[in-house]
Length: 198
Image (cartoon, rainbow, N blue to C red; front, side, top):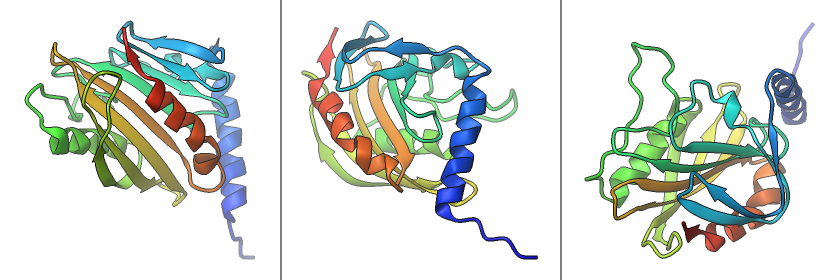
């Protein structure tokens, strides 16, 4: 007997996995409106999100994780990363993780973020690099495409800027291309445009 897994079935499986995950840890409701990330910058959220940062144990310093439907269906990272820090937690003591350096140029920052995405997803690729301010800071904006190990296509959008103290301010949105990515993209664009430095 043969079995074919459709994309919709895969999405339902991911949603069920997210629901199971959500029962294991606490989340905090983030209401619509101004939200301050790590005392470093603020954004305006167009709708309520859930703060799922506690799922990232051990949590990388300076990284917040927000979601609406669960981290496999949409996620928004809001991070301020110090030199030597990372967006992702270490898989184990022996596996190196991508780390941010203060001397990185824009292209290297894009590669750093892409390498962080590659820790969990398959063959991420950055495209459409362009300048965009992060609040008052000159930054780099780009799009991402990747997929899960099961083959689900994931879209992404990122905005990053180095601060005067050499820390990296970063916003990264990831969601399945089927429905979720395009559905929330206007909210993400509004959050990117609303960033103000604390």
